[in-house]
Each structure stands twice: as structure tokens, then as C-alpha cells.
Length: 419
Image 1 (cartoon, one colour):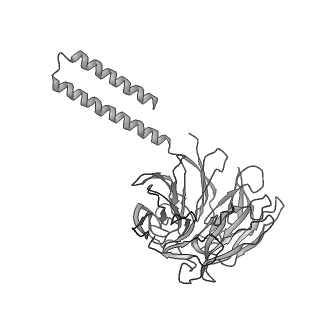
Image 2 (cartoon, rainbow, N blue to C red):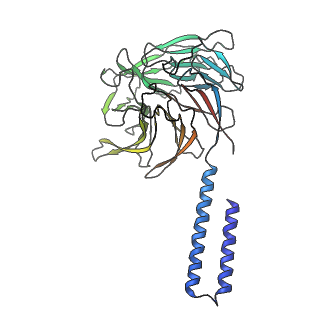
Image 3 (cartoon, rainbow, N blue to C red):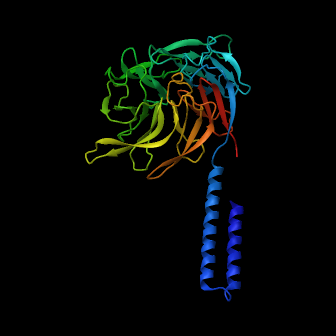
């Protein structure tokens, strides 16, 4: 940047001297042409400087193949053995940093890519608050959701505890529903035909999760293969609501209250995780979603009429990646703006989805805020993709957010490189 500014000063000096020396010989039109040329040159240099400055903010990533085996369609991170290093948890295994040595959590479950495994989403959390990171595993949609208790460096498999007999929706999320600082689970109970949230144990030593029924309408987002769920304040009352593609459940003052009021609305097509935030600065929260099995990443602009009724205007962000079944919105380049991270869920339907045989790409989309927001696509990798969710966390302790994915191509870590 400094070198470019120096070059611009030299250009200004050169042209000023040239014009002064030549003012007796040049016609007025020639002088005007030179000045116009100077202006164009200065504009080009300024644009180049801005481009170089923007490029310097684009992060680079180093890829690590933790395993090529299909063990899970997600991955989590946490210090499993309390050695001060962040380890990786995926499926039936945890991988010890920094060499990524594999350890068993339960049975040696690996799967064929033309089938489905028993590990769809993975989360790390100290469930019983004993100071050791435990592991939450979301199984095939509709199956029991469980957590595995960290054995505190003792040998043997981890003890498994059931959280709920069924957890459906293909993108259940861990969010703090009641604001107590502890992460909870939102999804559905596909057996009881309910939209639910599962409150995590609040007291130290407690292991019981509490089920709260958000909706008992069996025709509303209760099928095990339901697509799309999110969490955020839709109506601006300061309480975060639960969002599905067909509308949103308004959070009551007491989040444990059952049967939240539902507001039907055309929000999204079949999608994965849904993120709620104000994208165009108008004070109304919008929604980002992405197609789970087809093409499309969208933002849905919230509008209100004079009576306060909410409607949505749909905008396309990108349509060159299919099967974006894992989506995360977070700041990846450190500019303070929430970016999009997503990728192809490789063989989500065993080769039957549109674009199934296209490269398994992983992308981040740089958010440019404004009245008409935009996103700049950046490819991270073209031979990994994403699974059912994406983990962004500082894995190696250098202060930069890294990206962790798991799917039928294996488990992959992308360490962001310092500039």
C-alpha cells in the first residue's frame, strides 16, 4: 500500500513537471488530454491499491486430512484429555492433537459411502460440568440422541447416556434457548410428532435433559427428514424464536412454556441450518438459508406492512453449489462481519441429488454489508466438502478461526494461516 502511494506521488510530480515545461509548446487540448490521462492513471492505481488491500484480508488455509474413512457427517472440537490442546471428535473416535492419533469412544464404526452411518452431527460440551469435555452425537434422523461421558483419561470406551428417544429434523442445532449460558438442542421428536427443544442439565453433576414441546401439531415440521431449522429474534421483542421453512414459533417469556405461538410464513425452500440477523441495516432481522439437496444459497429479507405483518422477499446469493447441507454464519476473516461457510455434502443421497458428481467443494462467502448486501465467494477446497454441519473454532491456538468438517470423504481440518 505504501509503495503504491509513493508511486502515485511520483506520477503526480512527473506530470506536473511535464506540463510546466511544455506549457509554451503544447496546445491547450494536449494539456487537457495529459491531465485526463493523469486522472485515469491515478484512479487505476487507487483501485489497484484497494484490490491489494482486500486481497490481504482474504485468509489462506492449510488442509489436514484427519481421516479418509467415512466415520461421521460432522465433527466437533475440544480438549478431550486436558493437555491444553484442542482435539477432534467425529463418529466413534476422537483424534488427539497435534498428531491426530485415533482413539475409540465406542465401537469401531466406519461406513460405506453408499449407506448411512449412525453419526450425523457431533457437538462437544461438558454436559455434567465435571470439567471434562463430553461428546453429543446426533444419529440418523429420528433415532435417539445421546451423549458420551468423558472417562477422564481412564482406559476403555466412554459411557453412553440417552438424551431423548428421538431427534428428528436433518439439521438440529445447539443453541442457548433460555439464555442460561448453557447450550440446548432444537429439533423434533419424530416419534411423538413434536417440535421440541431439549434443555441441557443446569446443575453440576446433573445428567438429565428436559424436553419442552414447542408444537404438538403433528403436521408441522415433525417428520424425521424435515429440512430447515434456525434460532433468532424475528419480531424484535428481544426473545429468540425458533424458525422453520414454513414460519416461526414465537418464544414466550418463559421458554419452558409449551405450545409456542406459530406464525405461518413462506420463508425458504428445503434447507439446512437457518441463521437470523439483520443483513441490510434496516433494523429488521433477515434469514440466511441454503438448499440441502439442490442448488441455492439465499437471504430472505424481512418486510413489514403498515399493520406490522411480516412477509419475506427472497434473494439469491449463489447457485453454483448443490447439497449445501451444512451451513454456518460467522466472521472468518476478522473484519467483524458475519460470513457464510458452507460446502457440498458429498453423496448426500448416494449420488441421486442434482450435482452429486460435481467436486466436493468447501467455500466461504465474504459478506459486504449495505442496503443491498452482497457476498463474494472464495473457494477453500475442492476435494472435501461439508457434512450436516460445520465447526469453526481456533484449533491450534493462534487466535485465528479454523474450519472443521466431516462427511463421506472423511474428516478434514483447515487451519487458517497467519499473514
